[in-house]
Amino acid sequence: MCVGRFLFFAIGALIYSSEVVEGGSNVPIVVDLSIPLARIIGLGSFISVQQTGEENKIVTVTARGADIGGTDDSFGFFSRQQNVTDIVATMHHEKMVGTNRNSKGGLMMRAKLTPDSPHVSLLVHAGSGVTMYSRATTGGPTTRKNVGVWVEDLELKLDKTGNTVSCFYKHSSSPDWYHLDDATAEFNWCVGEYQTDTECQPVYYVGHAVTSAADNDATVDLIAGEVEITHE
Image 1 (cartoon, helix red, strand yellow):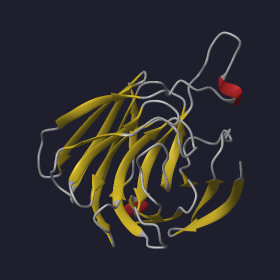
Image 2 (image 1 turned 90 degrees about the vertical axis):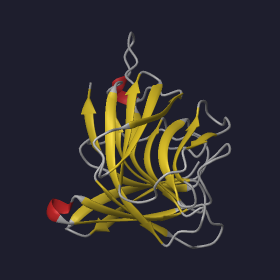
Image 3 (image 1 turned 120 degrees about the vertical axis):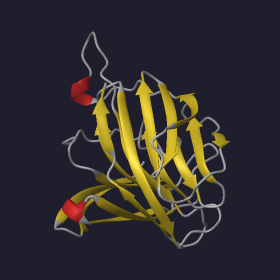
């Protein structure tokens, strides 16, 4: 295991801490849940973040990585730690820039910061539109379901109850959400101050996930709104 930490500068005089996770198991540091962190997941990945627009609510996440899929992932993750079991997360997906056909970006819920972690993600695949990706167990295979619509100007929503996450999407011009499917993942993991003798308080991560899906140094930009989280 190799875990490195450094300070990362973003436009708008905002400072973020970044964690580098290169394989193996990782016990994350408990942080202020109101502060998003730029994280590098998997070997060969990279991330930088700029916040612009009114009140810095437009996020440009620039990242590279081999892909999200298979039994482990390589991507950039701009996320907040969560310790409430049931939440709803939404995100406006404006567009991706500099993509190849397999680049991906969107909204992810992830159990841990390891490359083989369980997760449920609603991503926009540059070549085929809105797609749900999930890995139920650590090191397990990735399940994929694609609906083949839209690559720009849409809304993404993940509704988590326990270990089940429901995936919804809609075009920004539409009032109606569409339910893509549900997926389950092992989010029941405890750490540090959230674990007692009688109770396990879950810790997991929610945020923007971006990969260029390339084996070289090519990057892709995800331009999106902030991830908004509500507790049920």
